Amino acid sequence: MTLKEYKNKRMSDPEFAKAYEEVQPEMNVIRAIIDARISQNMTQKELAEKTGIAQTEISRIENGTRNPSIKLLQRLADGMDMVLKVDFIPKQKV
Image (cartoon, rainbow, N blue to C red):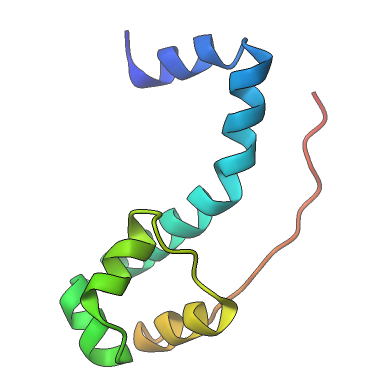
């Protein structure tokens, strides 16, 4: 069974689906940071050097144990020569 198949199976459980949806905003932010850093061919260490944010803090943000502020997200974006953009989009109706 693939991970995608497993997730689809588990999503039929309302409790699991609710918990999954609750963590999605955080996971989206984490994925965006990692994807942006990788797209710039930067290591966490290089990003730390450009932003003045400790590499350990960047690691904590990327592994979900630190919840970054908007100000910290802006520093990360600046360090990657990117613009921080936040979108609010309508929920999909099921």
